[in-house]
Length: 595
Image 1 (tube, rainbow, N blue to C red):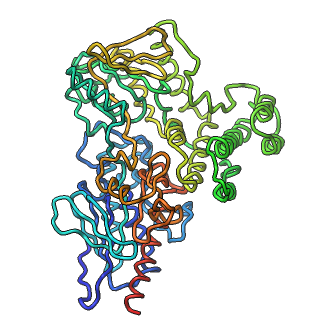
Image 2: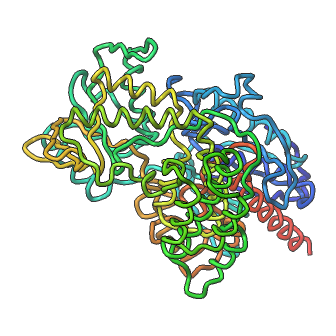
Image 3: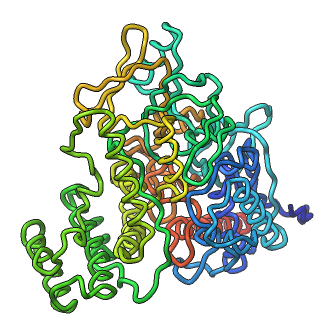
């Protein structure tokens, strides 16, 4: 790290960044890019506060099992800006993960490789800082931020008597732990009383899985990426192995009974590349529509005012690809369809247009059916459902790896475009984020093939949709309306999902204290921030001049701190805006001091 000697007659400005993971690294990269234009002060000291290694942070640290993969191709992971990012600062290109690591772009790299990449990006960002800007890493937790709105901020650190004083603070905390909600508290208490095992929502790599005994049934609630990690660690992680499409157990595995609200795993990552013309996005949900929603005097309702635009945008992406790449499966010309689609009102009129123009129902976009494929579906027996869900997963894998269905990839591009707009709207509820992850951020195809092998081997069993868990008679019981009358009992329950990042329930003491001191929160409990630059808002909606926040604990949360190249990178845009606001504030602060 830089260790420039500053002019003793001048006092350097001080910035504290709480969180040294990829979001904190991205902010430093943007400070380095923008400082030559915006900052010529006597110096700047940046203090990074995080108990985990700079760059990788907690989630991507290299000290975790090499069995755990990323869920994106290595060519689709970058920490660097490009011309697609709409920002005021300069583009500073850099290598994607696959270019840096020298691996095949279609590889799903393990998280140790990603952690090494993030560490390198961090080192490059620090090295790119202009002379006079220094970086210091404090390996520990920040406990509290205090200080007046118009004065220096004080950051208390765990295990350190003297606080850090700073002109500005940026909270880039990443994913956080949370206290248990009422249901989880009750289940945990029951488990403690009856000698059961209850693992609450957590980051799977941090969970103590040794309490799950071999050969015993374990209820698992959650079918997303946290479940995939759990599945890997309890099978290959216990000595099992795959030979082709067959799983050979080690005998140390528990028997996993998994279900969730949807009752199905997240959709497989798409396994082919884009070719040909891209849909011209945004079309129905772009900056103008977002501006209009933000300008509504009475605010907006997501389901009533925003979701119809989302549906229309995703439908446009889907049908543009279908008509331009697969015209033999359509009944009219694209120009005619596009004109009528744009003019069609919601609901029946648009459905009638699609039915007349797209003969095969399998080529029509049905978001409701995609979202809840088991709604209204029942099976006569548990065994029938196992076979039925294996068929569903096999069908999903086949479709997501067949470019004949390339309209699915167009919908993925539409989801990215929509997300870039919805970030500007602030808190839109948790439903959208779950829907996006389910469709666009699912597991690699090989993971679902492993899931099928585990099912055939009897190590993994499916419970169904709307999985309910009850505690009684000294055990946990799970059931689902997908298989009426079926019940399974177990002495262990795993909640395979991430904790909810809310202000009131966060275990992070800094956030809890921030809430107690008057920081604003959304109805879902997220920290409210100014959409322009990330400044923390109080309960009256006033931006704090000296406190910023970026990441999933805020209502400006994005799909991730890094992204695929040439897709606009909402997190990169936010990092740039915050970095520029930080540099301008510190520059003006120095000018005022001189004046």
